Length: 147
Picture 1 (cartoon, rainbow, N blue to C red):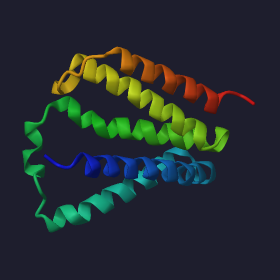
Picture 2 (tube, one colour):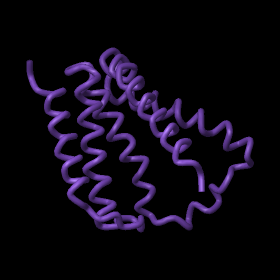
Picture 3 (cartoon, rainbow, N blue to C red):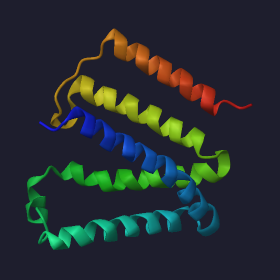
Picture 4 (spheres, rainbow, N blue to C red):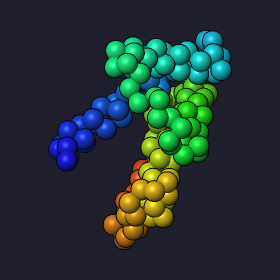
């Protein structure tokens, strides 16, 4: 099993990437349009992932038919995320959409853990998690609320 520290640092790095991507996406969206920004972000991501994939001979793409059909919706969900952030950042800044995104992610992930959605291991809801979610939502409101 990989080190928890390595995994945590990887996810924290991804969080920093989202925090930096949001204002960049806001600029693209406000100057070019939300659909155009989505297209640019996803083309950039496709090219950046295609190059190492080609170096690996296509990786496991040949096994695509072995995954459940609904997992292919992950790409569409990515479009929803980028569209929402691209739309919101020019209107309310980068902090509020990011904290709302994180709060919604945690709520959805907690439900997925609780019910074992998509075949993940069940991690039951307990008092600590409920309190944590409550604190997160309270913190999100403090960041988002009108001045």
